[in-house]
Amino acid sequence: LARALPDATAQGSRIALRPGLVTARGRALDAADVVASIERSRKLAARPLLSGFGAVRRVRDDPLAVDCTGVSPAAAADALSSPLTALVPRTFSASKPDGTGAFRADPTARGVTLVRNERAARGPSFLDRVEVRKAADLAAGLRAFESGEADVGFLGAGLHRRRAGALDFRTESVGWIVLRTGPEAGEWGAPGVAARLVEALDPARLSHLGLAPPGARATGRGWGGAAANLYVDEGSSYLVEVARAVATAISQPGREIRPAPLPHAEVARLRDGGHFATMIDFVRRLGPSPRHAALSLLGAANPRLADKPPRTIAEDIAVLTRTLPLAVLGELRLAGARAPDVHGLEQWDLGSMWRGV
Image (cartoon, rainbow, N blue to C red; front, side):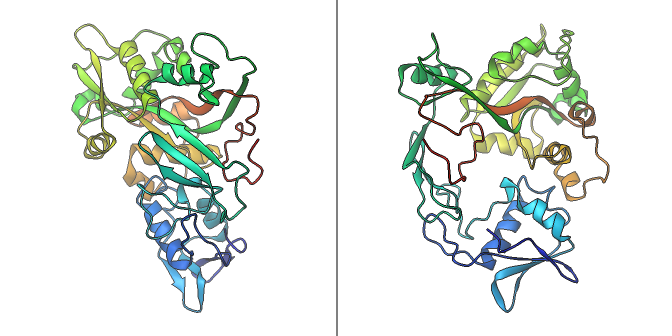
């Protein structure tokens, strides 16, 4: 979306947009939208990536350019190439998303419809539309794929039998499913406890969900704190399934862990306020490198560390999480099976111009 790579300035870097950028809903983008997008991302999951950024200001004589103080051109390019620092209009609303990608996203009562975006910055999609519908559970999704109602099956090629002609696919990791421990667990909420619990898991408990906990050794040791709720976002049938499997795996007699699905906003409130003992959560990957992975998990565990991340971070996830109040249950990859006339899911980049059938 930029005219070129960032230029060095006396105070940091300068970035200029390509002229003529328009969002899927018809909003022209300029430097004010860049400033608003960076400030929005600073408050969300991209916080660790933007920790080195000082003030971001519009350039007086160029309506498409911004100056970023305190950050080198290389660091600016790295941070702003992340999907978590996407350029969106300053009027952006999560209830009616808008951007420059190959599709326009229209939320519906059943999910979301992705409609071909003729204004896309890198060209519109080949597909006219994609309908994404929420499944009540994983079985419902696989049943829909097996019957031909859906064109993509998550984690399988059918519920009872493999759909004829189905082709398997597997994407790169988009993030991690994590187990958090919190203040209401007392000493069992301390950093490293979640890592010990995950290391004690039998990997077979989560394999049907496409998860492989790093370092799991199936030692059988489980939860030693008081009985507690395992909070999870009720809007994700997949995360609810993960919560049920984890609760069964770590519960001990008299020290049961109970899955407790709640609305997304309530889960976020409990997490941000520290009002929980255990929780299942998702952490989005900031970028492709091991350092990006470490920053993602560090920022998710302690937002204050995200503002000033240490220069040296353990890049081995199993080692890093022994110092954090969360542990990785496995990488989330979009994997399963697709209809034979659907191509390109392995990359899972809906912004690519060549995506289609």
